[in-house]
Length: 76
Image (cartoon, rainbow, N blue to C red; front, side, top):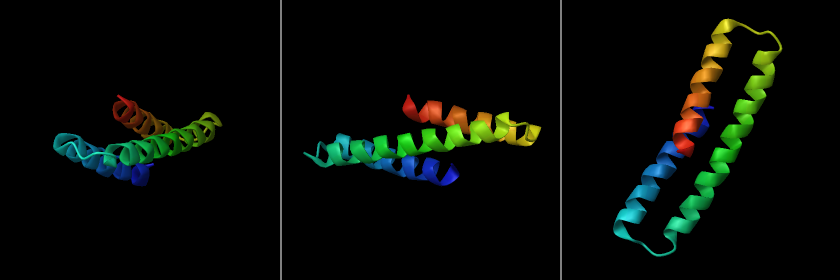
């Protein structure tokens, strides 16, 4: 999850730069990559949710909550 979050952060920064410079076409490619990474992160969070729901530790539950918050912020 952390790796995907870092990749998303990098892509979003790239997107901001492209949009600021109004480079034609580059924004569509970055948007596609951001969407792909968001879907991957949603999948990882879902897998963690299943694992935590099976009665694992409270620490993992807290970690999952934090990753869900990060995903929510990235989607916004």
